[in-house]
Length: 165
Image 1 (cartoon, helix red, strand yellow):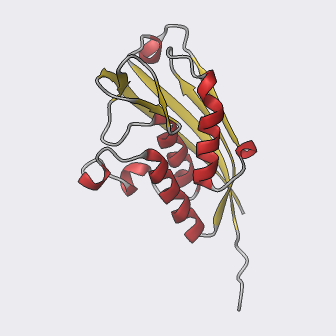
Image 2: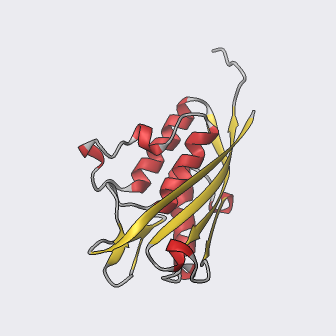
């Protein structure tokens, strides 16, 4: 059985935070994303796509911002936990396609490492992960450099065969 999921996340840019996208720290002049965890919008969108495909809710359900255990959490670890949850329900990741919406900084140099990080956390080859970046030509909150957003879609496959020992 195949399942498709979509995820979306957005966080505000603020002074005094690290900018982390796809598990990669990106130099951005001391401006990063505000959030309870590391605020990695890319990994949050990917996690939501995976959870959505399996009809398991969203990352807020599994890692609520009211829980101090997740304060400052590394979103790569949260993504790996999402994948463990999927595996327990016999889902495997087939592929992921994600887009980051950010006016600045330029993300192209970081994309290969983002893809590797996501692939490692999802237990797939990097060829199964696509990450793209785009600006919004100065329009909207991302275009005005007030925040960064990300969309992700995924395809999961579930082993529905009953196996006997």
